[in-house]
Length: 154
Image (cartoon, rainbow, N blue to C red; front, side, top):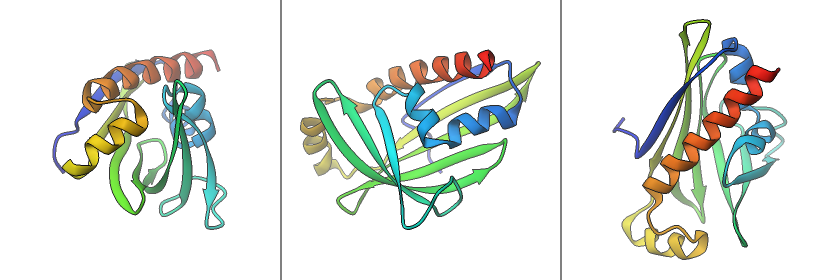
């Protein structure tokens, strides 16, 4: 796999399974994320598992849009990842890696932009973000801090 377009890490003083529970639960993740605002399970799915799909709701200011995500990795306590599509096109991949570190874990959030070039201008108009990579880097850092705060308070 190529290098992610945006990625950051943070140390979290919490057990791997606790951190995994936060990043693999679309509702809990929405509470920590900047743009991601919630989900609805699709196709009879009711919990995060490889192959499960969910419709993600996203927001930025007054703008709203939705995507469909398919969970590709659900390795409890180690990795959670999903591929995102919209209008039948691959948009991105989001991945959360959990590794032992000190008295807890190092959590790394990464994303790969998979939009075809022609779609980037259109999605920029829909989302209000022309330069997605630096925007995602900033959002990832905020999300990781919120996950850390949530996990360490529990």
